[in-house]
Image 1 (cartoon, protein in one colour):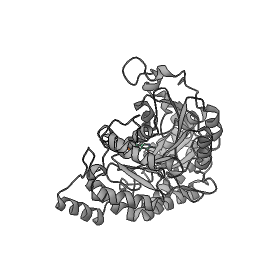
Image 2 (image 1 turned 135 degrees about the vertical axis):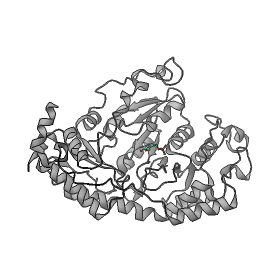
Image 3 (image 1 turned 90 degrees about the horizontal axis):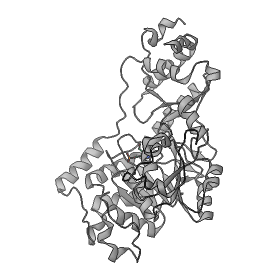
Image 4 (image 1 turned 60 degrees about the vertical axis):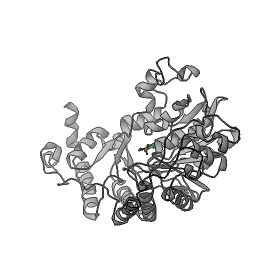
Length: 427
Ligand SMILES: Cc1ncc(COP(=O)(O)O)c(C=O)c1O
């Protein structure tokens, strides 16, 4: 193939028009919203002790349907995964100076949640095949200050949740799952988000199912569910009635999901199996057909796990492709393929950690710990970010058969002509 045929050298792109955005909102959601609008009660909460403390009828119905679907005892609806993570840190009683083990390759909200309570994130590296926490490194990082492991089921693949739960229980600490990306993911037939003491899901616009913004905390523990519900809704007003003598972290936020969002969530829950399966089929086809290209390592699925592919993320072995990942990504983007690289820079490189300035300007809560956040801290995460990960965000596009074929054809075209891409290194 001549280099001019690649779009990056002026040829015609393989994908001629922009891919349609993923859209899961249909007639069911429109009717559900309309019914709430006609009822006129858009949010059913009162932030003081009374029947309405736990929200209106749609929120309550949504929570019980969520608990049924994900097979857990309690579901607590919140207005985002971010607020759910903060509520989870509050519910477990996180105190200033307590350490929380987190992976560095996740959305920033995961590592910020502990800081809200003066907790200190301790970054532990990930496995290079599933991109989730490495359990041996987690064990080695536990100290007398550790209060929790906050595991992320990244891209929709479960972390080693059963092992992490065992480690947490043996050490008398909590396992909290950030399951923003993994609805219906599972390990040994148990849903991700329900193996830790608390799981937190996201219902933001980019996810498999969504309510615009929103989230859900899940737990099997009555006390934690009560504390989550209190923190969601101005806890300080109901400590006399609900706290059972505990006051730690029971000061309030407004993390309440509206009746409209809960009604949308109910409609989305009815479709969750179909919507997740559709993303899975696309990702599995990408793996089957792109995993044979030289140097493309398709996402691995650990035995016993169900991967739900919020993101299809391959690793590029540049020794085998002969071309660095970033150059391949530029050529693929020119062909119209919506790829991104690296996912996120390891979070400890963010200014909040590099400068150790979060709350006030004195360095608190970092002054409560001697943890450092230097480059090189998590070498696997850094390598994945800098050199290897190449992602297709399968939850961002509604790929039909023809579009999926054209994405695959674009990869094949770029890989066939990849020798010609080396000259871009000079540019
Ligand atoms: C792993 C992870 N954690 C947390 C969040 C934050 O979710 P939300 O936007 O619902 O607050 C996201 C959102 O993309 C995420 O992917």
